[in-house]
Length: 121
Image (cartoon, rainbow, N blue to C red; front, side):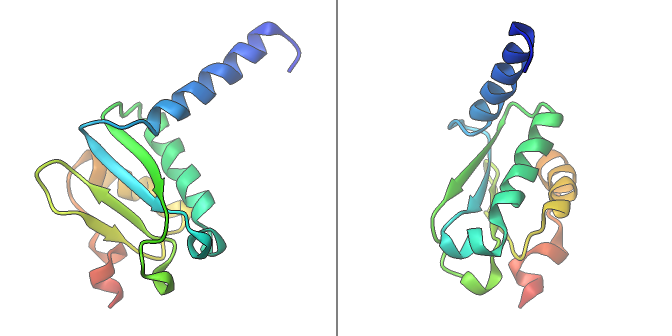
């Protein structure tokens, strides 16, 4: 950081990420961030979803974290809730999967079946 303009850029980026985590009536992307999730790599997964949603400027999408979802062997776990639809649970999520999940499920409404808990079992 070398100038006030650089500081303002950092401020705007941080505010946009904070706004992605606020409550809304739209789509919710929830990442399990209990100890088991963090140990399995949930933090980079959450960052990948924040980046993807921010890059696409999806203002109706909230990216949030929760504690234990209760299925530790499937961590990192991401749950997506869309108004009027059943919740979809993605398991063993890697950061590189976020772009496809956002593109196909969040934007186009088509869950990525091979990443879901149903496919894992």
